[in-house]
Picture 1 (cartoon, rainbow, N blue to C red):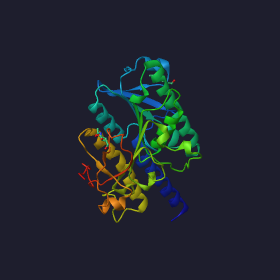
Picture 2: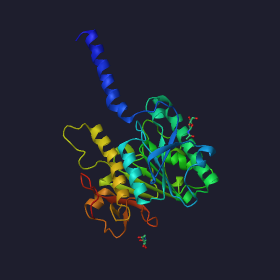
Picture 3: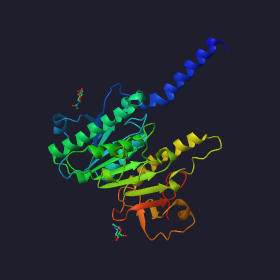
Picture 4: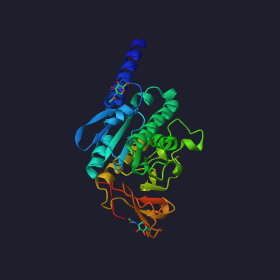
Length: 311
Ligand SMILES: *[C@@H]1O[C@H](CO)[C@@H](O)[C@H](O)[C@H]1NC(C)=O
Ligand SMILES: *[C@@H]1O[C@H](CO)[C@@H](O)[C@H](O)[C@H]1NC(C)=O
């Protein structure tokens, strides 16, 4: 191929990459951490800022449950799983408020600055939670932060940075640390970051994160059924398994309180598969895990939705 040909092909590949990878996530073109709140009384999300003035119009009272949803690397708050999860959370509790954290512009392009930006995103989000407590009387016990992938890691940093007390709950959805090995233990999402830290693990992408109070391993936590195809390179299989985690969460919230995703307490996946655990101690992955039984819980799923399977 001529030099011109190589350049032309490279430009076309780069444009395809932009269209396939970046455009669907619809960047706002605004640097910074953006917040949107959603309630069941209006279909459209509303923008808000982490300021006193912005909180004045937020429809929350001290008893309102508030859930934060933090997306992952290269994602934004208009990802379909974020929307499905928000809808499910509001359908489950019509008095609750969901706050979406959007930081697309801070990590997708400026990878060299990612770690600094991740700390910044966590700091602003923690500040917003402190303002909710101080200005609106929101109880930290009613605040639940849900973060996927890099967002799971950010959730841990948020819990750590809150000044007004201890966060009620964090759910880390295959929380991971892409290219950013934590420098200190405090940079991980771990059991110290909230009163209840629950993890769901589905892929090797999230396998380095330390234990929370309750750790659910879907299908062993490394590879998900339906993600193994002969034409899938290993990396694609891992990414497929990683994204499965958000859909397990969506299904768990859509069927909250209905006993979906029963999981056995077990030392490891092999013992679970070999029926070595007597499954005396069962917990359910989702909105209502039993917080008096902690440890590692294993469950298997179907390869397509609905994923939940009886034990
Ligand atoms: C949030 O802050 C931005 C930038 O300062 C401003 O343009 C926007 O109007 C603010 N939004 C709200 C809802 O206060
Ligand atoms: C939680 O688990 C404990 C210990 O197994 C059990 O006694 C209790 O009934 C469970 N709570 C719920 C709500 O299932």
